Length: 245
Image (tube, rainbow, N blue to C red; front, side, top):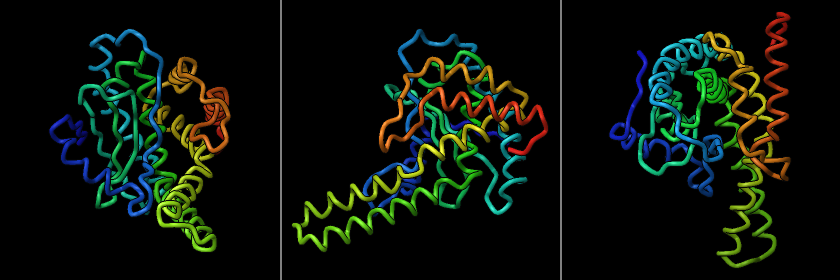
């Protein structure tokens, strides 16, 4: 059964989301960074209505791909809708305390979507993060970075506040080491999931033509938009040719 949770139900999930960050390491979110978008006119009410329809189609598609590619994982996706006022456009993936995958959208992000294909592609992207098991890999990398930072701090003989800063920096570097590669992997598999749900990933990819380009920053969390578009196009071409992705 598809569940779209609103503000009251989401409030009960907040502790779960916090618990899924890298505590007791520095507060680096294990969910993908926010999907930013330029200010545009709000989407018509029909787009919000389409969101529920997209979820109804995409959730079983994501579950099917998950069970085929990662049968060891919980593939019962739960969808949450953050309708709190003032939240920036954002989509995220996390897991609850039992390991169940959670995909979340803010209402402001839905208002930025222009077609159901864009909603489906974002949904597929977040589901792909779970299927590719990115969350524990990011956590492990952050922990390794924090441990290395702690070793550097101990050998340097710095005071406690400086040591904490070094540990925090190490965790940040560790968590972001493969973040761009993870994003591209999620783009490729997300295109597959969107197509499995009956949507066109190439139309959905129009979203990346509107988003501000993050460029290719050192230790940035997201690759350039052009690179993400290419990955989606390659995935669609591979599907058309019957090649594995």
